[in-house]
Amino acid sequence: MTRITDTLYNANGTTADATVSVKSPRFTAADGRSIAQNSMTIKATNGAFTVQLEPTPPGVHYDIQFQVPATGSNWSERWVIPESEKPLKFEDVQEKKKTGSA
Image (cartoon, rainbow, N blue to C red; front, side):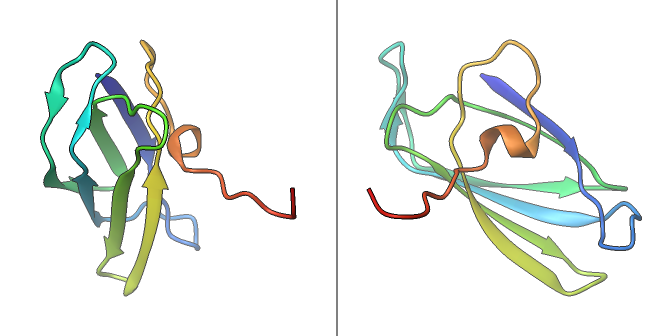
């Protein structure tokens, strides 16, 4: 399992209370275990967010939905989780969008 730990901030620099929904597809882990499709909801209080997720194989991602009730902000991200013994930040797991042409 890889731990993702970070702090969520509002645009004005204050910490954000948020609800974060994590949706996982069904996939096979690197050690051969079958990971079931599932979803979970995590509360970020005073910006503090922590979750442990199974590392994803190539081509697999988690769908993440952030909701910040105080500001009405909502956004989605895709996370690709590497194997890591140290905690990772949001920027470490956000799927990078490719730009330009090949």
